[in-house]
Amino acid sequence: MTRIAIIGAGFGGVAAAVELLAAGFGDIVILEKADRVGGVWRDNTYPGCACDVPAPLYSFSFALNPDWSRRYPPHHEILAYLQRVADEKGVTPLVRFGAEVASADWDGRWRITLAGGGTIDADVLIPAVGQLSRPAIPLLPGAGTFQGVAVHTAHWTPGIPIDGRRVAVIGTGASAIQLVPAIAGRAAHITVFQRTAPWTVPKPDRRYGRIRRALSRRVPALMRLSRGATWLLTLVPGAALHGNRTVNAAVRGYAWIQRRWQVRDPALLAKVTPDEPIGCKRLLFTNAWLPTLARPDVDLVTEKIVTVTPSGVRTADGADHPCDVLVYGTGFAATEFLVPIRVTGRDGRTLSGEWREGAHAYLGLAVPGFPNMFLVYGPNTNTGNTSVIYFHEAQARWIAQAVRAVAAGDDLEVRPEVAATYDSEIQSRLSTTVWTACQSWYRTATGRIVTNWPGKAAEYRRRTRSLTRSDFLPR
Ligand code: NAP
Image (cartoon, rainbow, N blue to C red):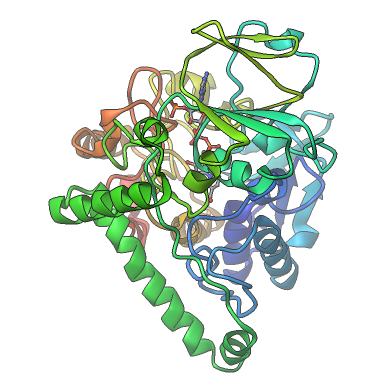
């Protein structure tokens, strides 16, 4: 019996488990440090949290959901969906909750050590810890002296006091632009600290009514149609990102119209006008962000933060911005794959050592020197315009083939030269993308893009459709 250990019970881990169960593998354990299935959708509960990829596509192809309440549902619906799929597909009983992995060592099989003590042996290791699971909190001078409540968006709890409080939010990325409109009007005052103006475009959100939901239940083909239409919709930002000048200009025009329409104050308009190329950071879909910034009880501050004080935030112009609650909407340490898990492969080589210059993996799935380790949502498998779940499913299908080979007595270790050639290709293609035009969570400090896939999603699916045995070292 092939023993399989998956790390993480988010969308990626569940995708892998479903595929492996369907392929007939039953000896699976999912090691999950939290107490529930859910990944980022369990961890992120800040007000306004939702997915900016339409639900018909941000869902599993094998579990289309007729019950979405809207095109961009709130996070609790997505979490409930994922947990339901995990239950229905028999994944939840495989999860060992409260099992945080400290290290994994290869000595002919994987020995996994848990932070709380205990070890697990497995023939196959499948890290599925995601790219956005470790919050990044900047080390601002004075941060420790703050007397109010300080919280990262991903650490939000229901007890965070908002009503009638002065709230400061650092950051204007995907998380902050959802949070701020959701708490405006509840907070006494909100100060938003913006370092870089994000590109925003209207969010084509809509409610899914009772009739649509009933029809979807009766005629599942309608859901496939909707998924297909959503797929086509995502090709538009995709084309803009991938260098189609006409589409790029059209999307910029759309953003320009939104800004002009929603912001009448010239000073605010100047502040919210991006000066980086569109798409070099994630393009944000929102209808509420700019009108919220225009509210009299919301200030947008673009001065640099110099220090946090016991009572608030001080900026470079000497102004003090008092607050009771300080929210870090400052994103995630996305480039530090698998940290803090210590992974040691063949001949004592460590993953952190192999990835010193930036993470890389063949197809985002396999790393030379680390036999029988297959990553879900590994390096260079993030997408700037479509659903990562599509990528997870492609990875899961490829992994099922790899596990079949392992079950047949093989150890699968990708050839170093195959991985190196692949990495050169990916990096060379990335070097001409818009993502090189600014610093973002896609890039390491040295500028290497380690998170994103350079092509179309369909290309990724094609390249991962069948495992090529000759890409791996001989038995
Ligand atoms: P993010 O996109 O990395 O944004 C972080 C923000 O914090 C940026 O505005 C950044 O400014 C700012 N920042 C970071 N350090 C700072 C500092 N020291 N001083 C001042 N400002 C600082 O993080 P995020 O908003 O959490 O989103 C991360 C990713 O999560 C998204 O790109 C998306 O993929 C995912 N997400 C998705 C959804 C969804 O709807 N699907 C929702 C939330 C998040 P700069 O721009 O100048 O760096």
